[in-house]
Amino acid sequence: MRDLVEILAKALVDNPDQVQVTQKDDERSVDIFLRVAPEDMGKVIGKQGKIAKAIRTVVKAAAVKDGRRVNVDIDQ
Amino acid sequence: MKIVEKSAKTAEEAIELGLQELGVKRHQVKIEVLEEKVKKGIFSFLSSKSAKVRIVYQDSPEEMVVNLLDKVCEAMGVFASFETSQKPGAFMVNITGPDLGILIGRRGDTLDALQYLVNLAAQKHFGERTRIILDVEGYRQRREETLVRLAKRLSEKVKRTGAKVVLEPMNPQERRIIHTALQDDLKVYTFSEGDEPYRKVVISLKNRH
Image (cartoon, rainbow over all chains, first blue to last red; front, side, top):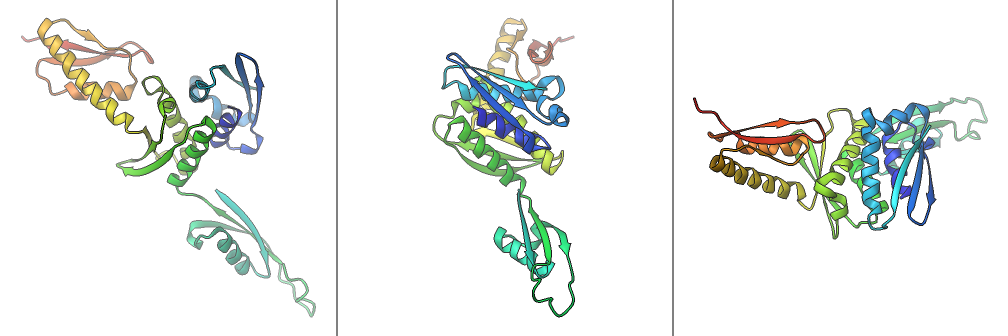
């Protein structure tokens, strides 16, 4: 799951080397934290969160097999 | 994108070495000469590496997109292969493989999200005009046929009962399919109402005066 967020984020930003993704696993849920360069925030959020929503949709689809809830947080 | 840096006696030789390593032709790459020193003197043969170049090879949009999709599918744990084809104003990638339901999602939600992200990534490298349509096992084609059949069937119902029919919420592409399917119908007309993402198509009887 972490890899998926990292691949998508790196494809969208101008500074792929500054993309950091961490994952916290729980019994029922997975929390993924995405961190990008400040000037790239818009590239992973988008107008009205449209890009962030698309990332979450794809990640949730990947998590269906797993059966756990996935949260993708974008950190400042 | 692949980048190599090479050093040699001359820039020309360094470029040649880089192109060989990448296995590409000169017109496919961008070349940047980082250093080029001309050392003269009797010991010049000792300072053999005095030119340094950077060669950047940019994949074609197709290669870049397929490469990205391949990584995404692998990370999602699905086995997939990709066929690309050129369409007017866009190129299409059809993803095939076993068990690709998760790539489609409910009513194509996941496929639409992935298509949106892939387009953003491609536009970043190749400009705004790059357009990519993703399909999974011909899903979009089948969905279009289903929507056209639905539109025809509901238009018959409207003609029979005289009451208007409101369809379920659809995205703009799907609503357009419904509008287009019924645009030449003499007895009914279609319009959309509500706000995204809950905008719905309404099929209604034309008033005859």
